[in-house]
Image (cartoon, rainbow, N blue to C red; front, side, top):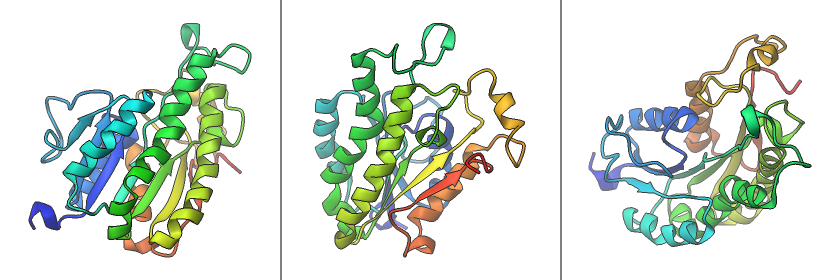
Amino acid sequence: MTTDDRKVMVLTGASRGIGHATVQRFAAEGWRIITCSRDPIPDKCPWGGGREDHIQLDLSDPSKTIDAIETIRGKLNGHLNALVNNAGISPKGPGGSRLNTLDTDLRTWGQVFHVNFFASIVLARGLRQELSAAKGSVVNVTSIAGSRVHPFAGAAYATSKAALKALTREMAHDFGPLGVRVNAIAPGEIETSILSPGTEKIVETLPLRRLGQPKEVADVIWFLCSDQSSYVTGTEIEVNAGQHV
């Protein structure tokens, strides 16, 4: 299969955790992955073509995000099968403390919303022609924190993810006539490097009594980008071991 024949995904926040597992999942299926993250590609790139298809981009800067659209489009062959908006930031206070509505300064609110919320619609709108040409899929990565106060996730992070869930509904309505499906996944406690101390206490209360693995989240993203979910749009799938019940 030539490069031009492969299905193509654009993924933000690819350097670790869920994003890294998603790259591996789609690469195993033969997809070409174009990654966007604020970090450069790692020296030991785990997927073929990664260095040529990586865009170093700070999504907290709206002008740079808008400017990156043409760079991304230049790497596409007129079609985009999947856009996965996975990038997210959750700033902490002193000693890793939770930033609540009383303590979070306005600049931090803006930075969080640019990365976690605005970048998703900027990229989707900018790439809508390519998504429509492929009858593609958009997956927005939200969070369990978007539906309840979380002991570790800050207020700006939580509200940005709640807004992203609502955006998913609106996008599904607007992108549907273009043949593009838009869904979200809401991970819970996933075993990544950004877990906060004390997460084990939450795990003890989960029906499945364990942390999730990034691969398990990547499998759900794969489902939403595959033909197996061809009649699914406008929904948010909880990936959290029953944390929402």
